[in-house]
Image (cartoon, rainbow, N blue to C red):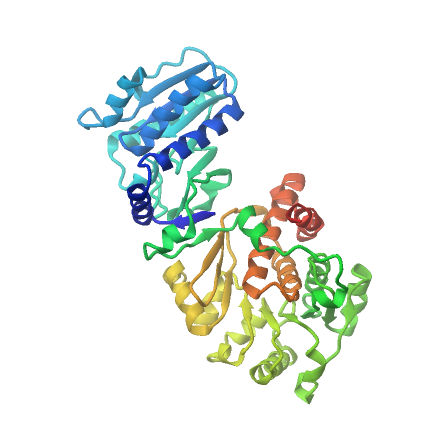
Length: 499
């Protein structure tokens, strides 16, 4: 589990844990975890730079452990501690026999391959504005890393980054990798570009350790979370037992959207994918995905019974905004407001654009419903301004509307009416392309059709697999050239790993 908390919450949780157990338990786990990572990297030279606080103490203990237990040949220690500061770390260095010098006096004698600078200066205690002497030292370290051709690895956060606001000092360290010690701070969500390469050290923090302090346990979506909620496929069941997924979408203006959605649905676990679209598009969809069937219905003429067989309905991909699409949405709303059939609904794209013009539209959706807006769609749906959108405000809207909200962005935020939040923190610029949302909708709708997967878990699993498939596509094709179709090609590979 990777909790996402602010620094005050982190300190509150850790203080309680330390009171109830060995005071150094969390630190020992952190030191061991980081030492293992560095041992595997096996740098020819390791330069450890420490600050005055606990982050610096961790750094000294990590170095000491590596000297005793690893094969790293050269470890050097430096500090960024003000001469007027009464730091216990200076005393700890003497106790450990560590020669600790000021970082700004470092002299480059020679250049070696695979040099790592370990940033243990500030961690989650950083706060802007940065003290001038610290900012100056950060600039020195950035310059030093260039002269040595060294990678900077930071504990918790790149020094210079404010964990509360997500703002950064002009000299914030240019870290190539960040190691989160137990938690990820809320500030990291503001600037995900700094956290594209990360590791997480599990400190054994349990959800009850957090909620027991009256703190909401927001979590990052990772493999362990998804593995826990992803059901094993029963070999004895036939396709009808895995549900059916209906996709309503497509138009002459957006002919590709339902193709992408049906393709991703077909490989994401549903027992059956059906598509309701224009006659001209249907032939192309069947050509691309022959397993998909055609479904014709007319909710406006009381044919709601024919739709009852679908456990999951996704509507909006490429639908367009016109008189006909408005009628389709209105008909679906009328049906869902009275039906006793417990469909799981995913609303995307033009369905959201149409609904944004209807006051309190969510009151018509009496079944489990997920909306998947990007920021602009979210603003229109709920008449809010971007600057007023926060984790807390999304919780409030989700609770008041009884909707599960998947807010798409560099960090995708999934919020349920009970206040639970799960966040995908793996930003990927290559995903900012046409059709990526259509692929995600197909996956979520397909997963939701499974009787044993609720709409919230379908959103979490779908988001994770979508993200991981995107990373694989990026690795093969690069951010510039990767496409939504490339992402689809990697979906089976990610599901296979989960199985």
